[in-house]
Amino acid sequence: MAYDSAKIYSLSTCSHCKAAKRFLGECKVKYEFVDVDSLTGEERQAILTDIKELNPRCSFPTIVIGDTVIVGFHEDKIREALGIKNGD
Amino acid sequence: MEIKTLYETLRKIQEPKGYFFNKDLDLVFELLEALLLNKESYGYMACPCRLASGDRDHDRDILCPCDYREPDVKEYGACFCGLYVSRELKQGQRSAEYVPERRDPDRFV
Image (spheres, rainbow over the protein chains, first blue to last red):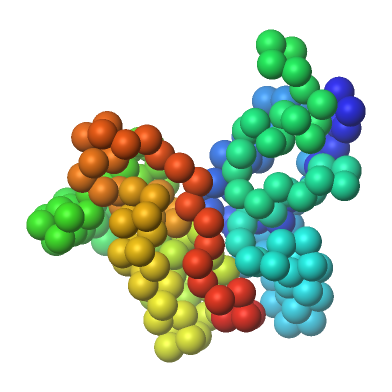
């Protein structure tokens, strides 16, 4: 596997974000997540600035694996970014 | 309000308008639960898959059903979060696609 860690910008209420976290868990990948809806004030604004640089649409989930940014929950793109071959 | 009640209430209102709940009922009930959570947290049913601001008027375009449901269901067969789908998608006459975000990103604050 090319990478064994990921970062997800997510919302606690978003089903696609929950599915992405579940999938990364199934892939045995350590991931860090930020539920942006639980943030307020300057911390929230700083994170939104970061997200808009990675994903100008500011949609969720926004997933970072190495240098790859994946917008939305796409199993195929996540596998590819992790370097997981089908059947691994 | 109980999720099953919300499900039945919305189904009776939305189906005649041509909007059907996703056949993935786990997803539907998870999203309805999230709508009720948002109602509790913010006082309004903001779309569960978009960052709510906490200001109802500012978020009037993402009150469920959101302003983007119509163009999204027309183009992709489903709304952004996947709660509502078209008749064709419900009946398996078209397959689900990823729905990109239409909302102006500057509205996320």
